[in-house]
Image (cartoon, rainbow, N blue to C red; front, top):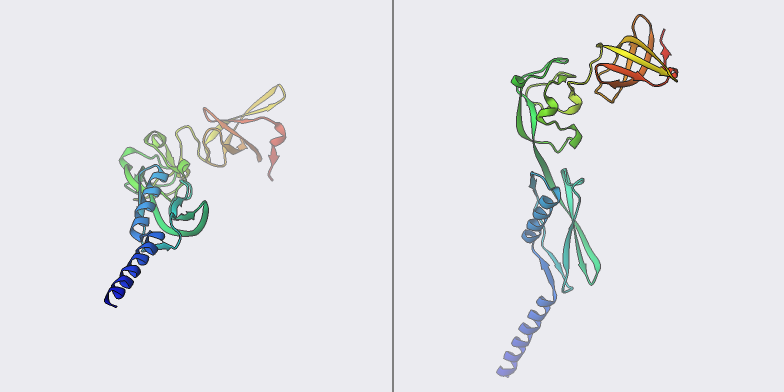
Length: 239
């Protein structure tokens, strides 16, 4: 009888071990490390990645379950999610979302003093600092060469990040400045003077008012404060 009880206990232990080996287990800590590593690799730039909540352990009855993280560099910015797919035998059997905060870090120009609208941005009023730029699109971020010789389009408070939309570049123009207007109609080019009605950089659309008239024109800003209008039908009058 004693031998029977021993056999029964050994048998139960054996089948328990077999059952555990047949399962697939992913600890929350293991998933956390995988998600952090995946996010850092996917972002491909300097970033601080945070996971604030505890990740639950994931257990499956199926053996041989694999886990795969999903996400893109475009989606992993600010408050976001990394997806984790668990698959067995080529079939996804579970999906979970792990909330992450991705702070994209980049050296950007920051105002060290208040800068008034239409004021030149001098080196004495800016410094380059590592900041979280997750809220800005890449084309809004400025390098040192971009900001040299630029002018503030609007009031910039101390400590604010200076972005492309906040400045007029050194080759640009500000509302109220005089320009030369070239209007081309076929082979005929008419040259006149006027003033611009909006800030613009070279290549951008700008509205101008002809000198001594209420005629408003829309054209493209070229170098040397010249506005080119390719069709005289673009002229409109304001009374």
